[in-house]
Amino acid sequence: MSVSIDQVFVKQFEADVHLAYQQMGTKLRATVRSKSGVVGASTTFQKVGRGTASTKSRHGIVPVMNLNHEPVECLLQDYYAGDWVDALDELKTNVDERRVVASAGAYALGRKTDELIISAMDEATAAVGDYSTGLTKDLILSAVEELNKKDVPDDGRRFAVVGVHQWNELLSMDEFVSADYIGNDLPLVSGGASKKWLGITWVLHNGLPLPDEDERDCFIYHATSIGHACGQEVKTDISWHGERAAHFISNSMSQGAVLIDNDGIVRLKCSETDAAAAA
Image (cartoon, rainbow, N blue to C red):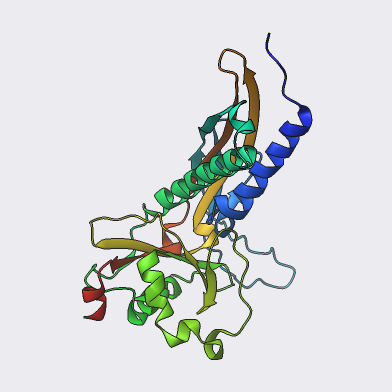
């Protein structure tokens, strides 16, 4: 006969999953425009055009800006991550198997969250560089110039996501690592290294696109240029299977991401090789 798992175990496991997902599961969710509690298979983000200020005569009617509203649909998809925990295996190991499986499931769903966001970023058309050099200061300034040309707000919500090789190149720049340039106040971005420079929060990520073996796409963007929607946060289900003498632990979520404003994101085409970076 099937045996019900203890509810304390369930609640503690769910707490571990949520904590692991928030702390180390996703690096990019906090850097984009996010909407939670979505009901249905999709949701809509509103892209609002620019308004124009005008004068009016005394006692006249205030002019209407007639803002252009362009809805952008974001489709949600369901994702799962599960594994078995054998009852007798738990007796033979000094490892907290519950926490191991909880972390693994949360990390898997977190990587999927970032994968969705990066896929949306990959639709951006504005780009600087040609993969012939590494992440140089000139390349970065060119990308910032593109954002400034399009009046992208410099309001503290600009982010840059770069690969491991590009992060090391940043660390070789005095302007990036010296407190004389950036000060000591670093932002809090969940899940990994981050640093503030040029009014941009720089985030290290290992899942960025590789157009070719020695080419890497990085991105500088405003938080409002990418939309992330969540219909269901990470949810855990634990069931006992007597025929297997094991618990099956299933984690699931329903999420999606979409490019909202192409003007708010710039692709940096970087080389992955040291030789090209030194050229």
